[in-house]
Length: 246
Image 1 (tube, rainbow, N blue to C red):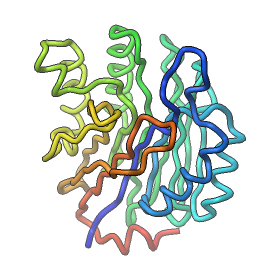
Image 2 (spheres, rainbow, N blue to C red):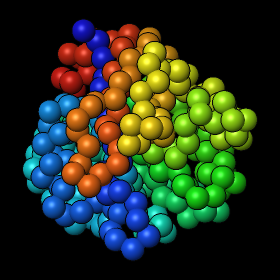
Image 3 (cartoon, one colour):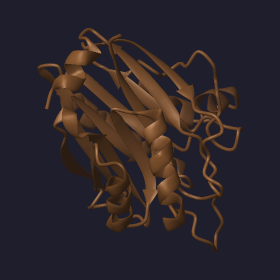
Image 4 (tube, rainbow, N blue to C red):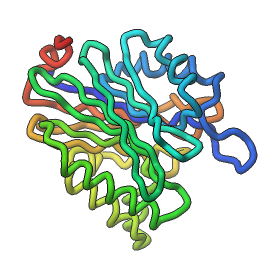
């Protein structure tokens, strides 16, 4: 088999205006257990509160390395994890106009390097969300890796948006047009409370032959509202070569 497995998951709690709706410390062991079971090469996570939580998660997953979005000016942060055997290198990005921080990771794919970016777009402001998607599209255009992936909570369901004539559908097409793999899943499985597909994993590049994405059911955190999303990228190099690089 020839593949790289990506997982994205918003690990925050159900949104309320008053209670903590980000990752709770008590949920970190369960997040680690689910990630161990899903066995990703790269995991792109959302809604960490502070670096201490990522440190606790990595202590439970010694085979991974990870970074938080350190420059983010929001009250919740994305994180990227990758297998240590893939020699990951992390980089920080800031969407200056909105203050949203991103973290990217490059990792070994045989003799080449892949790139994955953890994102979390604005939930309340459609224009701000569009601005963030445009900035990520420009970042994707500047990359030269033969495998590029963007994953996270986009806070938009393209199918629902298209049905109601919502501008979010155009925003999604802007990014999925550059990263077509994963843009049109075979089954429109919801990731938010069984209602909407707001989490996405998009990929492209010369190394990607095809992708298969699916929601992992019954993995939602006890007070969480998102299910993990998995994407298996089937490549032009053997997966053994991908995982053997250190």
